[in-house]
Image (cartoon, rainbow, N blue to C red):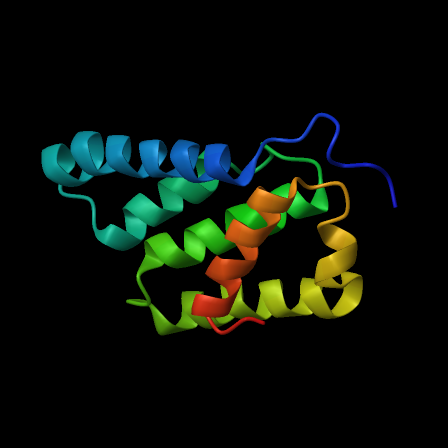
Length: 118
């Protein structure tokens, strides 16, 4: 496994960027053009489609997207939960978090625990 932590985007930054994209889409598309919440989430997903290369960044983004989805779309929630669980099963959380600063890793694990993913 390569050292993904060298040029990696921290979890707090991923959350901030995703929330910013969500906010912008709510303002520009939902309120001004009548987009549904599902369409807003889709625009956030599209904005980050190829944004990250490392496994941990993509896993962190998926967790953020799961949280932003609010559990309102059961099929999407199950798909994201499955993707997260599958990656954790295959790669192992400890392996994925190698090289991640302790405070950041603890924050990410905290979110996973709240979501009952670990």
